[in-house]
Each structure stands twice: as structure tokens, then as C-alpha cells.
Image (tube, rainbow, N blue to C red; front, side, top):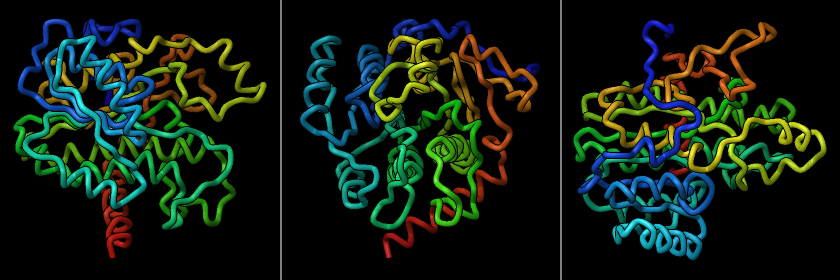
Length: 322
């Protein structure tokens, strides 16, 4: 990827989701937004609903999801907003969610996530929790909904990643920190790299089904995602970070999910409503991080790593199913 082939839009890091969706008619289209009851998930769902889409909020807390769905419906005048329970680390919950879905799916926004848990947590399978939640859960969801996406004709899958992917590739030899010391940001970074690699491989594998997939960095937005970062070091960073509003943070998700500008564009990583530039080597000064621009690491777009991750993830899910 070079700047001569880089995909750009008229939008900027200050663009809001409403500005991205202005003039777009999503009537007759259906969307799922995971984590749609908090943070930028709410704004992503609201923007899609405001353009006429039928939106399902896939949420852990069904009561909170139903309240949020009702609020979005009241604000947008769209009564096609609902909530459904989804626990990304629970195979029974995933199976029930997929089984309940009927008809085509035009937009799948894999937005939910957890960040930089200070201590190592594992699922009952022994999987590191951030990798299991942020990547494997969404991977299983997308696989389960593949038929619905294919039936839509021109469906889009959106993977919400992070600039934290720069912190770690996917460490295939020790995905779940069984031999290496656990480090919160490395674990989060690995999971966010996995989100990008998923989009790269999904776009390649599902192209014949008319499905495109892209990943994105929404930017820094103050939400409960940062709830585990409470120390003085984190606070010092927070005090100087170029935060976005929730409305700005949801803009790139909405762009990838619904803008006509992205027709046929897939397998890429976006930030600030444009395809990201390659990240600069460590120690070289980098991109304009003061403006929030971080770039994309080569390890996140590596097609061989993307294909390997797909196979490894499928094998892990098969083991659980067995």
C-alpha cells in the first residue's frame, strides 16, 4: 500500500457520523452492531437507524440494550431498532443469536470489545479473554451469519480495531500467554491485529459472495472502554490525548458500513475516515500522532498471517464444538 493507491474521502477526523450518512438512504437494509448499547456502538446504531436501516443491537445486557434501542427509535423515528442478547465468549449465546436471525444481513459491525485488562483472564476453554472476545467471538459470529451476508448481495463487514494493533502482531506460537508473561497492552494489541487480519481474509474469501470487509481505528473516545486504565500514568496520557467526540468516533464505522463511497472497497484498514498510511518504523518519529494519526502496521495486513489466523481460529472453534 502506498499513498498513490491510498483510498481517501472528503471527510476528516472531525467529521461526524451524521455528516458521513447525510443523504444516504438505508431503507430496506438490515444491520447488526455488537456492543450497540454503549460507547460508539450507540452512535453507530443511531446513525444507521437515522438513514432508515433496521438495526439490531447485539448486547450482553439485554435490559440496557432494550433501553438504548427505544431511545434510538424515539430519536430517529425508526421503529425497526431492537436489541438481542449476545455474549461473545459463550458458544450457546452465539448459536442462539445466529439461529434467531432470519433473512439477509447487509451490515455487520463488529464493534464490541474489552481493552487492556490489567490481569490475565481466561475463558473456560483457557483462551486469553481479549483474544477470545475481540477476535474469536466476532469470528464465530461472522461465520455463523455468512449465509445471511451472502444473501444480501453487497453486504459489508466492519471490524473495529485500534492503533493498539501496532503494539503486537498475532503471536501464533503463544496466542493465550501460556508461556510468555502476560502484558495487558500486548494482549490487547494482538487482539486488535487479529481484527484487521480477519477483515483482510474475510474480504478475500467472501469476495465471490459480494461481501466486502474492512477494519478501522475509530480514534480515541472517552467511553467505558478505558475503565481499566485508572493509574496516574494513564491519566497523564488522557489529559493530553487528542480525544474525539462519540459522534466523530463513530464516523469511520458508519463510513465503512454504509457510505456509497466504499462500494467495492475491501481488505483495508481505515482511520479518520480514510485508508491509513503505513505506520512509520519505530523510532522514526511516526505519523502525526498529535493529530491522532498512527497508521497501519505491515503485520496487520499480511495476507499469509491473515490466512493462517483464519485456519487457527477455525480449529479453535472446532475444538470447542467437539
